[in-house]
Image: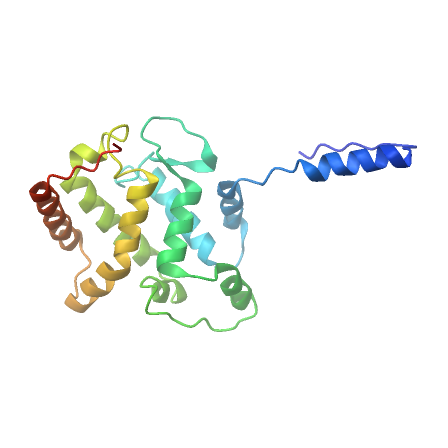
Length: 212
C-alpha cells in the first residue's frame, strides 16, 4: 500500500511549507527491509546471498541462530539479539564483498567478478556455492554455541550472541577460514578446538564475556 495525498490550489507559501516539511523530516528505510527486498532479485548478488543465509539460519531448527535474529527489526523473543541488518552487513563486508552494489551491477552485465583473498568466502559466492558458505558458518557458530553454551543461552548477561560478539567472530573468520582451508578442515570440530583454546585463555585471564 502507498498512501497518497493530493493538494489543490496551494499558495506559494503553502507549497514551500509542504516541501520543507516533507523533505526536512524524512525517515530512512530500515536496512533490514532493504536487505529483505534483495530476495526478489532474479540475479545473484552479495546481499541476496547474505539475506538468504540469514533467513535460513533463523528458520532452521538445527541452526545455532534458530529464532535468534530480529528479522525486519521485529523482536519476538528475548533471544533475538542480533538484527537482520547486522548479520547481513557484517557477513557481506568481512567475508564476501567490499563493493556489493558494484558486484551486483557487474553480474547483471555478465562481467566476471574477481576473487579477493582478503574475503575468504568470496570465491564460494562467485562460484554460486551458497550452500558451502552456509555450511561453514553453521559449523563455526554451532561450535561457538557448544563451547560457550552458558553464554550462548543467556543473551541478557553475555555479549556472545549480541552484535559485538557476532561481529567479533565474523571478523576472526577472515583469518580462521584460510587457516582451516590450508588444513583441509572447516568442520565443526575444527572450530570447536579454536573456541576451546579461546575459552581456556579467557579462564586463565579471568575474563568473562559479560556486558559489564
